[in-house]
Image 1 (cartoon, rainbow, N blue to C red):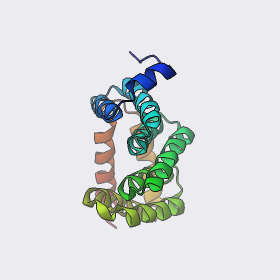
Image 2: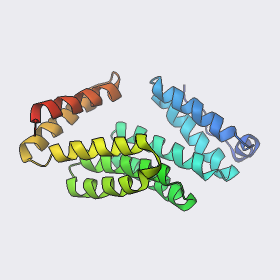
Image 3: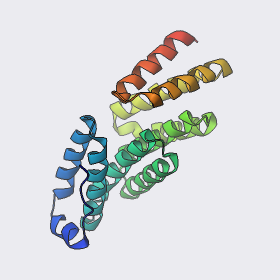
Image 4: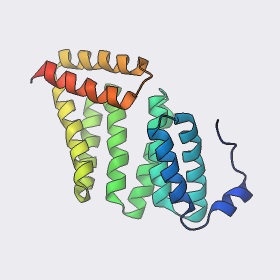
Length: 190
């Protein structure tokens, strides 16, 4: 059941130090458990509380995660807006790793929309910023590898069909995406 939107007084009351971080962890857990609607509402609450408390790093993380939810719900414009805002907040705070995560998400959106050149450029920007995290570097490198596989038209058409299939799936979309990427890599053997 979605949470009711918070009023300004409620946000101010919850905007004590650390409250936004605790709520963010709860939202991530809900998201991972498949409670996407509740997680989206919780991310919105986290954003409001974090912004009221001046915790831009937590707000940036919640914005990116909310953007990914909108992407999974086939709302690309909103997804991009949230991730772009996440990038801007993280960059303004000098958090290169968080900025890289936001750019990696944006590049993934561009890739799935067929914007290979834009995706490549954005992935490279993310890789430049991700030097502080082996995990984020590995994710970006993996995505650049997928992009390299898609350079031929035939591979891109297969990828587009696979994405269309994944969008129809309602069970554990993240695992389905991983299997899709592995299948494309094995099929292409470029």
